[in-house]
Image 1 (tube, rainbow, N blue to C red):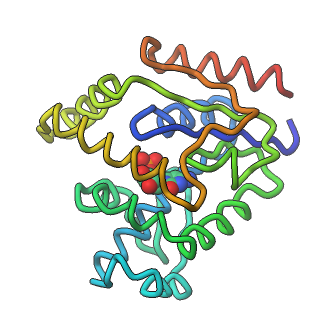
Image 2: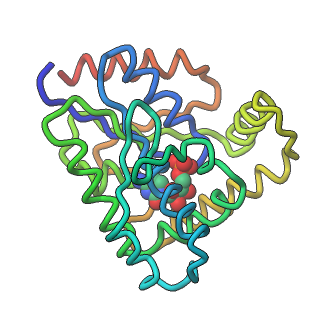
Length: 217
Ligand code: C5P
């Protein structure tokens, strides 16, 4: 396969990153988790103690370098892969990612990362904005209770105990903010194939998408 781009979009907890990573490993493609980039910006903004509501304050992005290597996210040379999953980052990332300036910077990086390669990129606006000409576009969904259940299991595996109702609420708030923002909101591209994963396990979704990739080649 020469150059090939797969765009995977969907709401919080729909399994985009886990599924994209598994497909990338199986098909020897590069996986780029764009949510991790917005999370990295949020982490640094919090650490710098800027006013998160002030779009101008994000100009610090001119002097930092965000990169993505084998599913580790780096800011300059610092590995922030674990830190970007904190509650504080999760609760602020939808605000940070709503600013046109921040999005422009990230979209530029994402477009460059996808050039000349075999890439599977996941996020909210990949099929609509970042890779509008992707060879295959997928929109993953699942009922909010199912998504919260998956998040809860992930947290339990890592030794954290979180209330199910709190997770449902957190996911609903993030989805609401992500799909109603002015700049490139979460939205299914007209030519994306929607897959409801509520009653599917990870392997079933992976196999389904690999089948679609093979027919799109
Ligand atoms: O995918 P994940 O849940 O880690 O994304 C974190 C947040 O980053 C989303 O809730 C959304 O606010 C933002 N995001 C975005 N555009 C993308 C990917 C993520 O706005 N392409």
